[in-house]
Length: 176
Image (cartoon, rainbow, N blue to C red; front, side, top):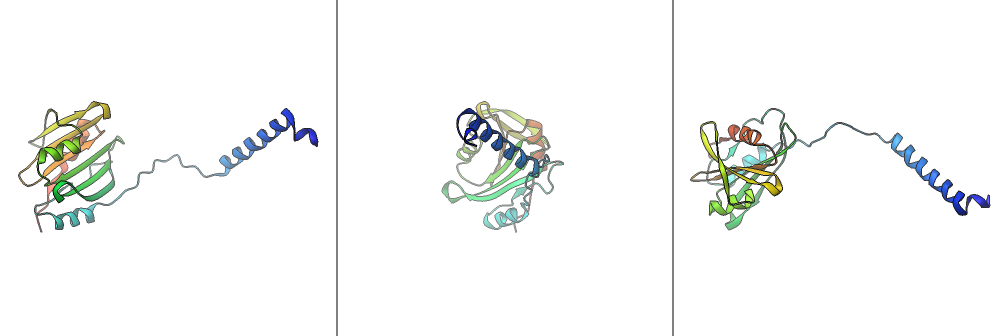
């Protein structure tokens, strides 16, 4: 018995017992190969945001097909302005986030949200012009639309067509 507790044989037996135990554990532990992205309803957050701001809130009345809303929050931005964040996993399983606020100056808000102050071009979405911004080191694209009452920004690692799909679904809800 002593030779199994000392030297190379003892080490080999201990290693075998540990590996066998780990293998048995992995064998009996249930494993899921399915993707699980939590789905979070944002309707209450959007309604609460609508009560807190002096303008009609923008939001998609219906999510794009295959998209999963997975985050939402209301935060306080610069100068006490309210900021609404709606996050999505896109159909291609990239990230897209819609952000809106009446924070002033709008250029400062857009620069912080897009992580760049340089425009990369424009894109037409449903007859409306959106400014494109791109930050290559983060593979982050942004669509920006500055309106008189509110600034809309769509940010993400999603490609331009997916970001445009979200932009095209946005509708302003009446204040009330």
